[in-house]
Length: 178
Image (cartoon, rainbow, N blue to C red; front, side):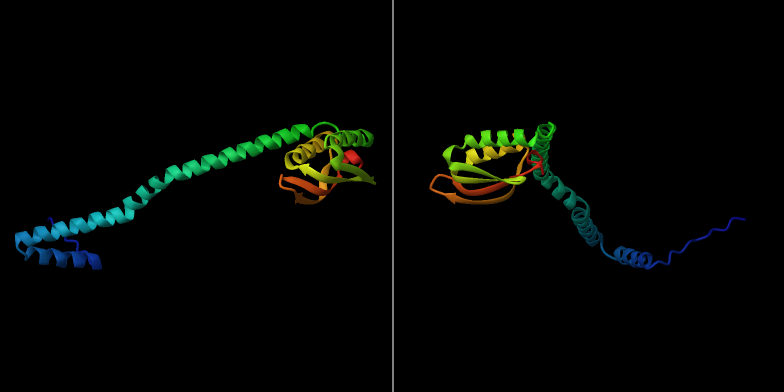
């Protein structure tokens, strides 16, 4: 005996689909085609809106994001190279206080009459008058590397039409016995 079983789907969507199918069958062929075409257009619009448009937008933004990330990577590589240079410069042993003091005096003599040193314990105060910005930057580099001291307090004011600086820089570090 073979008994045919029919499965009835009782979900709300199935019932709506059955009603739409029955209604569609009652319409003339031309209206059926028009409704199918409209349903197809709506389906394609939904597909575009949900699936394709976000992907296309991501692809459009990918090039600019890639360029921005490349620039950020370049900056990080430059910073890493600078950090490596500083690390190798600081790998040398700390000079004795007298050697550090001589290196500091030698670097400061390159600034000319516009700079004076005054040592107070483990710190040195350098008074600057009308020192060009590039010269000041080079001097700071020299004292950091050769005397192993860094600025711990800076009071500088820009002076004159040329970018020059006047003020005081207090230096300290292991080279001065700190």
